[in-house]
View 1: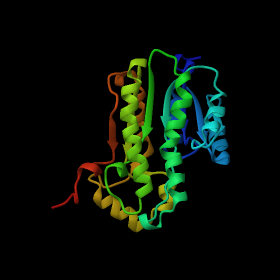
View 2: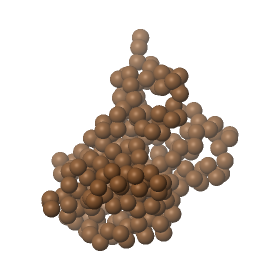
View 3: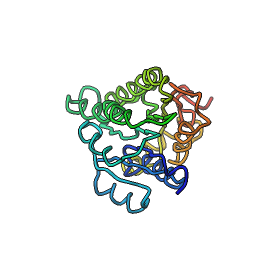
Length: 248
């Protein structure tokens, strides 16, 4: 057993995409990972592929009772909490229904609240890490993203508040804000025209690969980041700093 195996890492939205990549990275380094997701079939496949260091729990982060039940599967301290679970309902503001708002805010913002509240009593070590996945949409206007952008703006604000309230307990709280990333969701939902438009507005000229987002998450989870808290790190190929265009 490695020293890392004594620590549990909690990852939400762990069945696929960025969440799966995060979970896999920690498993490869000898950590025990508890992965939450509401997609039972995909989560089961991920669990089979990642092996015995990965424990899966089917749960909707928007339902606090399901989150608490999922965490009961772990009887050891949790050192790191990574709030990755999120949904998107892309439609114009006028067409965004109350149900859309409830669903998106329920997963993307209240889901972070539910997970952190459930995990805090189990974060009993000398130091802890909470890393929230935000988005470029929290700081840049994007058509059809009213609910999503509002939820991620809330994640940024919550990150800063938690960093203040939890500092005395030795827990740092930071966020990683990706731009467009190559994931099953983007591959399935981004047309060629949309991808070309995005790429033209990214100084680096391409979507991120999931490991590039994982690297930022792992840094915030590392001892090297012990003096960093309350920060939102954009990992977006320069998108949020590039203005209207990246050419003359």
